[in-house]
Image 1 (cartoon, rainbow, N blue to C red):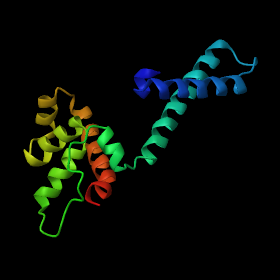
Image 2 (image 1 turned 90 degrees about the horizontal axis):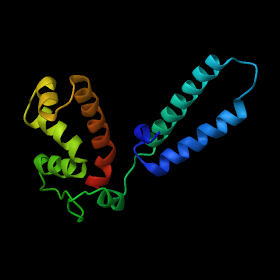
Image 3 (image 1 turned 45 degrees about the vertical axis):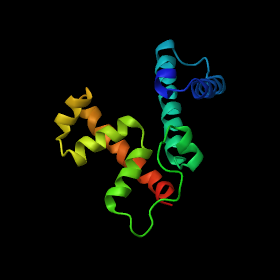
Image 4 (image 1 turned 180 degrees about the vertical axis):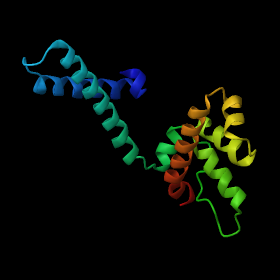
Amino acid sequence: MFQSVKNHHDAEDVTSTIFLKVVSGLDDTHGSKEVNIWLFQLTRTVIADYWRTRARASFFSLEALLDSGWEGSTEVPLASHDTAVDRVHLLLQALPPHYREVLICRFLLTLSIRDTAQRMGLTVANAKVMQFRALKRAAAIAPTVFG
């Protein structure tokens, strides 16, 4: 479970949720093969629900950004004289390092998705997913970073 959730406390919560659903939904009318399939589908659904819920609640406060390792300025950014370059720099600094790297490779260095994947030691599919998630995270934290 930890491999799917990446957090011990959340893995325990997800495991508890699965256990409660198993206890409430298990009956003796199905064979062991059907039960195994049902358990797998139940587990997959609960993990998907966990990530879906977590994605919906992905707003960040300044304290959360600082706790996650953000090293940007704690002053209110972006006076009217700030440039787009400054805004991009602030936003990139607010992202986790792996998201920052994929965005820098793709949009600042203008590398192809294949070259980005190779540089980061990922498959092309993983690089595409990481780019999508990085853009999604950047869009989610932009209001917090820019005030």
